Image (cartoon, rainbow, N blue to C red; front, side, top):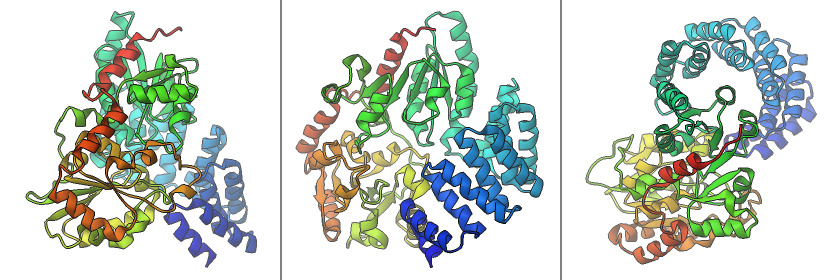
Length: 519
């Protein structure tokens, strides 16, 4: 029973509850190898690597041939920085199961990161021979081949990875960087002002956010777009740009080089100040936000008022094709919830999502666009939404973690959200917004920021406290899309100021170009 409760909690993203139930089960039977392994997995997911490693080792003490525990131990050791020990664990897994593609992949990726590139290439090729439809081995093979100077072979490997997983931002970034390398290298060789600039991805969905900046920088510099800290470190960037400067790998990529923070979202969730403070320079959406961070203690010299990069295409009215074609002649309602359970409207709508949004209307297509982190961590939500999309002809699930949000915002007649940044991006579209408020939000001590715009500026749309009233609000929004336009304009000015020309990428590129970097 405890294990079943733990599995349910883990599937729902509640890792603390999952850990509690598993540890209770482990106390009753300390020599249960499977439970030790499961506890280790949850502990590793919450960053407690030392404890996780102990659990994996306990599992292997009981069952020395437990391949999954060997793999998990290797991953945890590698994440802790013990590369040699991690590689040894992966070797052990491969020795026990030579035809296990996952073990071969993990060993190959670890060998590449550890510098044994020739052996990594051979290991990854064996993995691909065992399972041709796994995209990640092609990606790591491409990185290894690129490191050996075999650029055409690397290009083919990246192309295979993209073919198998077309929306994966890590793969797309690798292919784009390889294509731009020759021109970038020539620029650095010909101009003293041209810089090597690293754009670091630690989430797949950062690719569509940062891609316009990559293109803007490529005009005068040599940008490298990468999700791999080793590749960035070897590139030797003079400037590093990232959406998440709290990622622990980022400082090691370019020691003593300036780090520029580009905002991923617009909501605070207690992260706006810490992330800006962790960088050398932070890009902000408006002069008002800049002034707010100055009052909070940040130096004015470190803050660049550039506009919001991800909203550029919306302000410029650049039409982006929707990856999943929507039927013509129907109203489109975009449902874009956040991923934190106590903040999100997803638990409130549950399995009644369609009827609570649609009501009695039969002319509506509902597009569910989860937060990318929900795609990866809220397994129960995703399973329910997949089933809903399969059973309902006019429900569309845009469930790829790396998918670009912008085309869906452009296509929507109405946005239904909660405290997601999507709501503030939708101000650029100037169509009706409906915000569902989860009554549990203030109990989320990690993410609840009462001073954040997601709670201060609820007036950007119609706020719903009772989901039973949601369909009526959607109906009103469809009937009168101009309703609330003056209020939206006022809030749009508060959030973006006069930086609504869609030129954030150019402004950031100009700021980066002007940086004087000391070697």
